[in-house]
Amino acid sequence: MARNWNRPILVDVGALWCHWCNVMDEETYNDQEIAQIINEHFIPIKVDRDERPDIDKKLQSISTSISGQAGWPLTVFLTPSGEAIFAGTYFPPRDSLGLPGMPRVLKAVLQAHREGNAIKLDLTTAEEAAPHVNVSVINGVLLGIMEMYDEEHGGFGSFPKFPQVTFHSILLYRGFYSNSSFIDAVNHTLEAMGRGGIHDQLGGGFHRYSVDNAWLLPHFEKLLIDNAELLINYSEAFAVTGNQYLREVAMDTLNYINSVLGDNDGGYYSSQSADSGGEEGGYYKWSIEELASILDQDEFRSIYEYFGLHHFPSGEKAVLHIGKPRMDSSLGTAINKMRSARERREPPVIDETIYVHSTAAAAIAGLAASDYVGAMAINRALKAIDFLESRLIIDGVARRGARNGNRLGPGYLDDQAYALLSLLSAFQHTGNRRYLESAIACGRGLREFLDDSGMLRYASPVASDSDLIQIQVSPLGDSPNWSPGAVAIIAMDTLSRIINGIPSSDAEKSIRAMHGAAARLGPYAASYFIALENHFLDPPRIVIVGHDEAIFKALHEAALSVFRPGKLVIPVLGDSISDLIRDEAVMAMIRAGNTAAYVCAYNECSLPTSDPNSLRQLIMNFARDKYVFIY
Image (cartoon, rainbow, N blue to C red; front, side):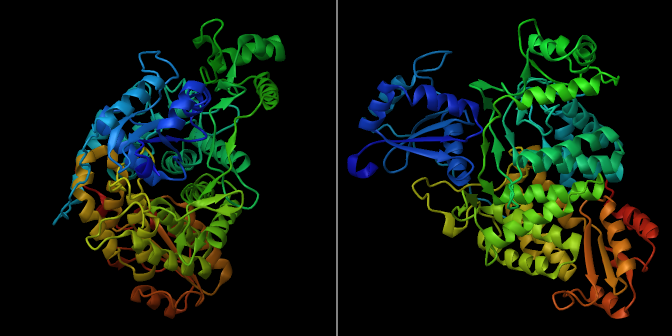
């Protein structure tokens, strides 16, 4: 249509949870003059960032190259043949705040199009596989992360400040073996975030990011993927530090995910908007007058300093954070009254779309919380994985998700990789053959995202229908969520280690193919470097075999409860999966006929044990010196 009518294309990219996307929809695109110009002279296309991340990533690259801006809302103008004309983010209906109004932008784009002033962008990159990769490259990444560490407020960098989930993970994993300062940085950061306004102090869960450097003033949207990956951070950090406050935050984040975003059929909803009652963050803010009207004097005094209300000027609504932690008899009553009052407000809208990648991540997080913080979440997590397996993974290939009971289009690399990892996690927690068989099929589906060089594609050939925009989307770079490429590498290695006892050759090809690009990104590809370390350092495998169900169960529970980076648990009750295993060492353990557990790494296995306490010590210490390297 654009070619036939010779009209430029206006692409608006947004999401339900995005406050300024909603503002632009209501104020800019509802303006009569603007609507008339668009309808008469443009081909308008609206893209949901969550449903079509492939298109979003391509357009974000264009916007960054043209204007240095990225984010949402995203506004991109293209010629009918897909060349860039102009790009930006939010445009108001009229000139204001130093921004050009949309009518002026539209007229300038039309003139540029008529004069043939498209921008020729070359955003393709050619990569050569790295012939040698050494884990010591991680040293520079760790140094770069620690240089950004905010010793006063926790977190990394200045404002706006995002929870850097992959920074937390790589520091925790390396700190586990040899550097307590890394663990201290993670502990401080997670505590500061938990006490900040970025953490919903009454309802649990985390907002997307903080606009200040002290975690006090959030952007109020809540995303499932953020909360899932943060739940893993908090659960693993508690396992390492024993810090009970981190456990409390993990538990209330899990409760938020399950109670607010959980779908009755098993999946998880993708996000919750920033807006309610026509106000950004209105659901979460409190005026002093409102608090005084619902609390008695003792209750008000209890919460005034506890929730840091003294930080907010008179007349300004407060975002709750933990100012001075203390407990008294009035505090619990006051908090219950505040929760009841908030429940009477109009809640932020929930996007009830279920995406495979974030539902799988939430299930993995629920299993981690069950392992390390004692949450009773295994059944709910398995219900989510069963939902994905039965409805959204077809012949080993993940769909993007479901909306209103209808499947969305083909999945992307993050969907396929997280789906595979969730099935493998379910197998490790249950020993159920069905999960391993589904994971094997899903592993074959993941190969569709690999080219001959080992480079991972963000979209498989069947999903690549946005050929108008000739840009290859990179699966690298943390956003700050885990990159699809890193999750895929870890998933490939996990599947291969369970079945074959060795890391995946495909994973190694991908590591080498993407190493140059990852090295340029440095800390901002932290998840890639976690995957690299996981591949080359051969994390321990705990193999549990035998027929005595009581002993087997005790060993299995012990194996799951101990944290060690990259740990894999392979439960083989009787002959349940012996025909799927091609690791001769594991087959020899099965043939021995004893009910026992072994810890294996670097082509060595421990002596068998049938004692859960001995197994816990083995998991913590077996071959531990092989994972230490000098910083």
